[in-house]
View: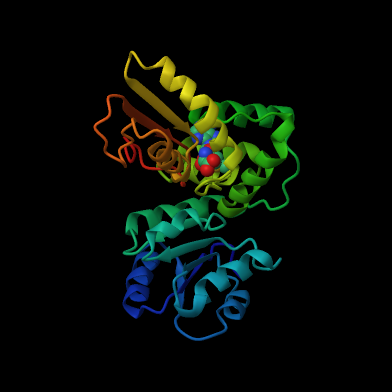
Length: 293
Ligand SMILES: C[S@@+](CC[C@H](N)C(=O)[O-])C[C@H]1O[C@@H](n2cnc3c(N)ncnc32)[C@H](O)[C@@H]1O
């Protein structure tokens, strides 16, 4: 097999799309194969050993997702970069082991950028990453503190290493330094920062999570705050790290029930004290700013 060969394998049931993507990839100097319907995608990929798989992850009966999972598990296919495609754009931040995610209709320019990146780094692919040294930790410490406010040190370094290594494997970074470079360069333009943060934070949230906290708020903290703010007639509530908002909405419901004198935006009373909310969070799970006001 020639070292110059760059074989891109398209796995998609949409023949029209296969033709269009093939033309783009051929123009970029790739060899192209297409696999359409039917079972056995995984075995076919193993045999062809392509340099890139462009995989529709929304094929019926989870065939695409299953293939993606199997590629990532097996030693012989782990290193093959996968570009996941789908009409469901929201899958992007669920599929963090893929090299890239291209929502359909596929952006041709982004696909060409992916191919150029892969061709440039094809001999550098690392897989077995060890622990970080102090210098490497310092690099990410500073980047993450500046860009997200997240703080990492020796006490939570394992969480950081696990998250970094998953993204390093996905994009084929040689080592921590190479990934840091990629993060600095493509943090915004290729959403790398958001993808990494999705792996470094916990998005768990649900209504009435940790009842004891709400109990303390309702019976101790809020009565005192309301009393203190009586003359100002306003109450500002900041829900930090609110994720998708279950916590502030739970609080709003409890305020309605226990403090009918406060208009919460959900129960509109003519009460004399106004409430303002600031709900802030990070990463893919965060409420859109301004969703609670
Ligand atoms: C475990 S969730 C808790 C969600 C919610 N507060 C609740 O109790 O249901 C933690 C949330 O905090 C966010 N988060 C973590 N560190 C943050 C930071 N430095 N700034 C803003 N949000 C952060 C995460 O993205 C995640 O949505």
